[in-house]
View 1 (spheres, rainbow, N blue to C red):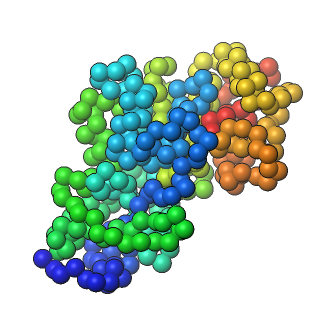
View 2: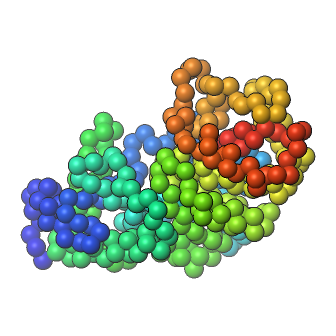
View 3: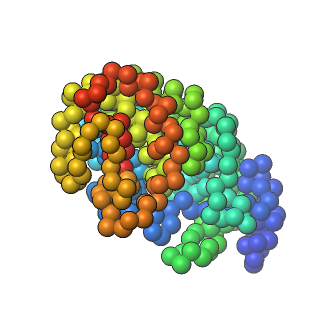
Amino acid sequence: MTTIPKEPAQVMKQRVGSVLGKQTILKSDHFPGCQNKRLTPQIDGAPNYRQADSLRVHGVAIPTTEGIRNVLDYIGAQKNGKKTKVLWHNLREEPVVYINGRPFVLRDVERPFSNLEYTGINRERVEQMEARLKEDILQEAARYGNKILVTDELPDGQMVDQWEPVTNDFVKTPLEVYEELQVEGYRVDYERVPITDEKSPKEQDFDLLVYRISQAGMNTEVIFNCQMGRGRTTTGMVVATLVYLNRIGASAFQGCYSKFYKKKGVKKIGVGEIFPQNFNWYEGHVSDRSTGSSMDNLAFKESSIGSLVPINDSLTSSSPPIDTADDVT
């Protein structure tokens, strides 16, 4: 066993893992302020959980292991509950590992707030990296008295390093977490679909999501997560909404959105009209601010929806505008 260095910077410089390498950190995925207080219900360990109105489509930030259970319990996917089947889609492309039930992501020490991009990476490769990251953590912890240096974020945005005790049983990849939940009896079908943050999904990713959702039973619940449960998650929810719209038919969907318009106080004039400019897509209401929401820069809102229209070719001019799919937020 190596004596624990006094300076965290020394630990980071001495890292020699194939994934947890020199000048990289393990940053907690959860940080102060990540929960949108206006979203309900607020599920412990699952920030920014929400469900698309009248649809079996859900979104959430990356949950803790207990948060995953809480979401599945809430939906009814446990073996002693309603036994609802769930398709869970993890849209993170960054290597993530669970330490003592909390999700941590690999970051560069000089850029702790920026994602490490792996544009074009596939499921097999990212899950191999996560398995290797787990091994790197356990090997490094063995040198420091079964402790690993992790980084948390304070409310003021400052980074704080601390030593986290670890054992083999409490360092897990996301795949291992969901496989264990299946063993426990949860009816969850897990799929990793790596998508780069703030970029449109690859064509094959669209195809995979559309196939899984279109082949699922109509009573199957569909869940998406990324880090914050915003950009990539909302993209997935839009895809699922459009697939469901296509499956159940526009006439059945019309009533659903008539109720939505009335509830939100949004006036719909005709086909193709979008929500008001100050509509907050993330919180699902008209904002009292004229400035755009934090969702305004998402590429899918302008471009990707257009590319999804072909799967929706059964819609007629009497159908709700395609923009209503953005209700998923």
